[in-house]
Length: 578
Image (cartoon, rainbow, N blue to C red; front, side, top):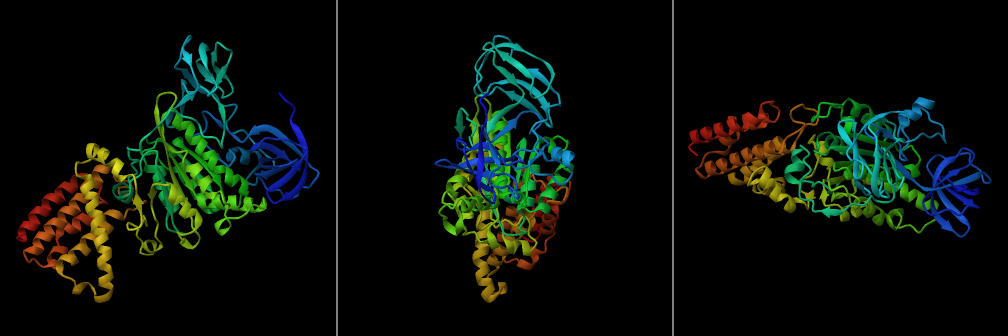
């Protein structure tokens, strides 16, 4: 191994340190000062090396030693990732706490994967089989899934020998005829995306069980979504609902610069949550990356890349991965702070000029792909955005909207009315809807799209009528328009409102969503016919079947009851003479 290059600190400006006497490559990891603080090379100017340090640089002085490790920032990939809680540079927080207690000293580190734990490895290849980078060579049970052991991308040749039994992540489990040893663990630089064979169209929905999302603004597997919203509008609760209920097999949750109490809630609630699909703890298919707002900004900037690299690793096994980044605004603020320390020319609102490029680079690493092992996997990225003062015109929100195809706009006014999820149906949108139509038609119902468009149209009409209502009052409207207002209210209160904490209402399968909305549509059609036959609107709005529709979503027998209510509706309208 080449001798590590050593130099001296020349200047310290917060997390940005200038060193002299080393000639590293861009993005090499270096150890700074007597405390050996971890840092990364971000700029080279002549003989000077500019480093961003991932820890607090208080007390570091010019003249202290700087050591170049000769390698970029990498994550360790292998069995043991699931159920783990890491910081932004993949240091396991529970391990650091066991070493030092709740307050971790600077310069303390630990490997991302446990070196002592043994895993049961079962080979899927035999002597003489041809191997190439990305091939699946064996399996290890991990958490709620089967961890598929991948050959590193530089592995190529015929299998000379395989091993079966219990091994640590550093043990060789497959040896090639060239002498190349495949271990359970591999490393990957976080700023480089992992390659794949082919990118596929995003034409399968990520089913979330949240009615407003699945019915009105669906997200495809391998798609990108943004959840912008002001303080307290429900970004974190929505992210947690998606983590729990979406039909992704793996969840990577990146708490990037969020408040410490919110991250504490995630860290304490996630281990207690039950995976609805397996009945095991939800943490068995989750990786948490915690980087709170009081942690160093440089590690915050790296945390998003750490998360997406872990997500790509599970995608390469053929799993559907859901990545929650909460929030990309804090990530952008970390970039802004580091940029100002580097004395770069600021862009809009002080953010660096390359903000849009960095956001694009991150979101482009998602997608539904065919992997080198022949499997199909996907990464769906949901980025929460926290615009200051709820202003959606600020640079992070606007640049994110240029990239993502789904916009779930959280609304402070809906929050004040206690309407949750507080997603505004007039400003949100999904560009995946046309691509997903065929899937819904084949797997749910032929007229799914017609029902969806009817609901959107009714809500749009309500918005237009509300302007008149504010001027003259609803009593001045003709009965047909008053009915439109009432049906829109039914859609809002019965269908779009959903309790994250109610055992039945928290998750709604697609078939149930379709039948529920179809029942509301059927009520609307019958009511229109009744009004044309001069039945008073008051009689229609006080019907028993309307009250039954309101209560349905909280009933454990909802799937059977929807059909009963629909049949009863026919009888009740017939009794009105409609």
